[in-house]
Amino acid sequence: MAVRRQRRLVVVLCLAAATAVAACGLSLFDTIESLMEEGRQLYVAHRYDEAIAKFEQVTVQDSTYWLAYIYIARCYIAKLGWGSAIVNARKAYQLAPGGGEVVPVFAEALFGGGLEALRQAKFSDAVGHLVEYIRIKPTDPRGYLNVGKAYLGTGAFGDALGAFVRGLGQGGDAAVRQELLQGLLDGGLQALSRGDARGAIGFFTESVRQDPRNFSGYLNLGKAYWQTGEHLQALDAFRRVLELSPGHGEALQFLRMIPR
Image: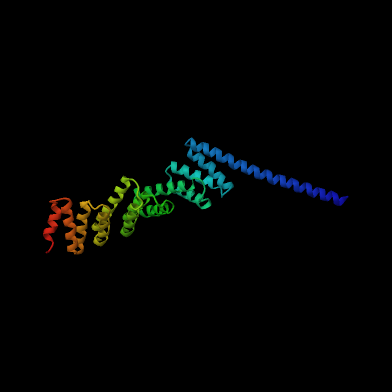
């Protein structure tokens, strides 16, 4: 009898323990869902700091709950807090790269952070954010345009040229294409101003290849060849300027100086 009573007691205790564990699990789930719903309502109401606090409580209870990190990132994007937005969106991406809205939110955070760093002339930071953006959005010409600008800021002319060329290869609307073409001209002029005529030739050669009726590209290409002492190539470039813009004074001036 005593043995039976002990067995029954063990069974009762086990059932009670299982019920308690299940209840705790349900309670935790209910708490997370409640916090998420409260956070979403605060987010919709533009009460971003309060929303962040709710979502952070979720991550304390479950550090793998990737949706909470997405909402935290969204709140920081709305506040233009790009650094925190990137950190939280990256965490969500690491946890669930295929999760709904993970890639778009992460991309938005990286692009916004890159542009902000570019505006503040923090060119190395801009390069880092925008290169990561391109990895997850490899067909967006805006990524290449802005990372090209950032590379110009660091003086990495070869990387800048490569970025502009890749951007032009993605298509896109006419306005972005025009900015990319302008980036080629700007890059060549910056290289010339820093005494890197050979680097400038690369930019201007690509510029006239992409836009063969832009006489400004040929004019600057001629100047770059002039600085390297390659007068025959300079002559060809200045002649092309005159074909596109007859009587161009600067091109004529250089042509008179070129030894025949």
